[in-house]
Amino acid sequence: QVQLVESGGGLVQPGGSLRLSCAASGSILSLNRMGWYRQAPGKERELVAAITSGGVTNSADSVKGRFSISRDIAKNTMYLQMSSLKPADTAVYYCSAVQWNERRYWGQGTQVTVSS
Image (cartoon, rainbow, N blue to C red):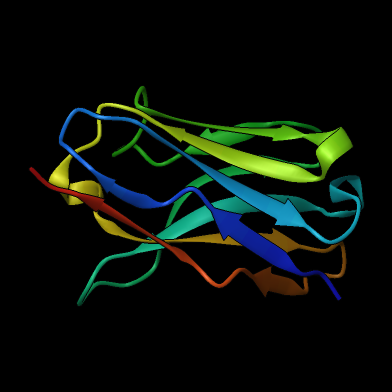
């Protein structure tokens, strides 16, 4: 069982920055991969960025150059640094972790609102 707790969401003006955190209950090195997803009202959940156990990252085209995924192994925490935020980035952001047996876990989600 893996528990994930997100934090760092909030209200930010267009062009601003936020950093989301996802704290895992155990060692993140025991996980196959982790990622950030988001879901806007009326839309499907979509992958924003992901990081493998080996540290390889990838991100959606819509956030390339603006968002960065990283992790702190010692703190068992994954981050999503978001900059140059746009109103289109408004969504609930979810942390996800996948074990080697492909079992997936989700955090409770954190709201990010980009508005002036």
